[in-house]
Length: 112
Image 1 (cartoon, rainbow, N blue to C red):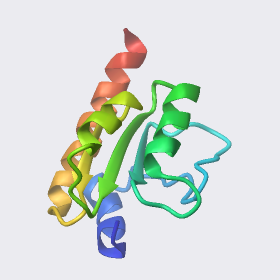
Image 2 (cartoon, rainbow, N blue to C red; image 1 turned 60 degrees about the vertical axis):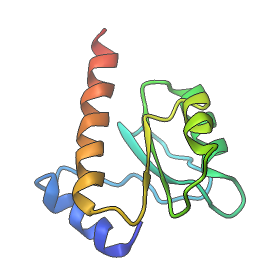
Image 3 (spheres, rainbow, N blue to C red; image 1 turned 45 degrees about the vertical axis):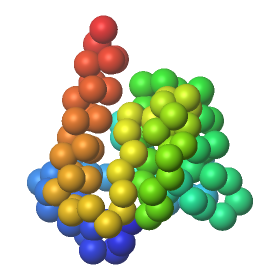
């Protein structure tokens, strides 16, 4: 995600966005509601990181971000429990909308 999109997120959510961490291995002391995760990362793929996150806590909604169109990504994302995947070159409003949808989905999943 570009720095511009990162800066736009707190504004879009009335400053209610609180990044927990921007780590390569996804470790944190508490679980986030929604995770934005790059598909291609050094050390571990976003697909593998998503699998680990959703295995450890299925209530976390993971949104995968990619700069590359890949015919296998939809199937891979579904297999590892991702909420959705987005192309990085899309407008920031799409990212914001998907975060909101994922948060609502996650919230409904916890209350069910």
